[in-house]
Length: 117
Image (cartoon, rainbow, N blue to C red):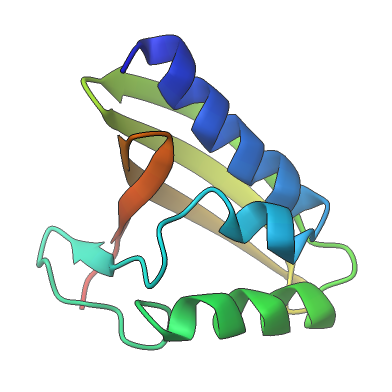
């Protein structure tokens, strides 16, 4: 994959996230995508695998002002590392996040969030 095709995938999912377009958002990921904490590699069960689609469905429904602003991005091989600022999370919350996306064949196949669990 080229850097451009990796950027297209992560940009598409970011745009769908900001539009709260669940169908378009999910189309960027493999089914039952694993979501892990980094660096522990522990699976984040409430948003991983089969829980992924339901988690984002509820988030989009409960967050009418949800918006993620990309602060910075690094691409290395088939990995995109995004630093993000999320506002309107579950209504009023503002959160910072670092998300690491593994992309294969035009889909996100694994996600890590830098998180201490």
